[in-house]
Length: 343
Ligand code: FES
Image (tube, rainbow, N blue to C red):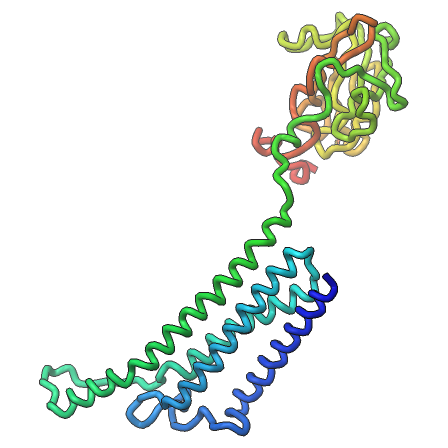
C-alpha cells in the first residue's frame, strides 16, 4: 500500500511539474519552440484570411490532449487512492491536477483553437464568383483534419469530465450506512426486565411512593438511548390515556430519561409535584399525565415504556417506548420547532 501511495505521489508530482513547465512555456510564448503568437489576432494563430495556422493548431491540440490525459490519469488515481483507504494530501494533489488539467485545457482551447476575428459582410444577395466558390470548397476540404482532431479532443474532454465525475461519486460511500429504523427504536423488547444501573432487577412492590430509579433493559446496561426512569406514584393519581391503562402496574410508571428538548438526562424527580425535571433548561414533565411537558422549552412528552409484572414479581417491559426517544428529526416532522429556536 505504501509503495502504491509513493508511486502515485511521484506520478502526481511528475504531472504537476509537467503542467507547470507547460504553462510557463505557454506564457512565454513557447520558449525555444515556435511561438503561438504569430499574427495580429487574440490568439495569434490565424493568418490574414482568418484561418488558423495549422502548425500552431496542431501544437495547441497536442498540449490540450496532454492536459486532458493528465486530468484523466489524476482522476483515476484519485479513485484508486480513495478506494484504498484515502490519503488527504495525495487526494488533494490529484484533485488539483484533475481540475487544473481540464481548466488549462479549456483555456488553451478557447485561446488557440477559436479564431478571434469578427467577420461582417453585406447582406445583399449576390451569387459568389466561381473562384470564390472553389476557394470555399478548398477551405472546407482543408478543414477536415482539424475537425477530426477536435472531435478527438472533445472525446478526451468528455473522458476527463467523466473520470472526474466517477472519482466524485466514490466519496458518497463516506456517508456511511443508512441508519434505517435504528433511530426510531431502542433495545427495549417485550419480556426484558428493568434493572438498576448496577444490573439488579426491580420487584414491583419494592419501590416506595415518591421514589424514582434509573433503569436499563436487562443485558443492555449503559445503552444511552435505552435509559429510562421508573417512578412510583399512588395509582389513583395516574390519568394516563385509555390505551395505556395497564402500562403502570401498582403505580410504577416508566419514561425515557432523555429530555425531548435537547437530550439531557431528566435526572430530578419532585415527589410533591410528581414532576420529572431536566436540569439543563428546566423543562418539567408530569409523570401522572403521560409525562406531558408542563414547564420549560420541551414541547414533546417523554416517551413512555409499557411495563408489566412477570410471574416472579419483577418489573418487565411489554415492548419498546411509545415514541422515538430524545430530540430529533421526528420533532420537525411533528411541526415542533428546533430546540435552538426555543432556547
Ligand atoms: S435539554 Fe432538557 S430542557 Fe433542555
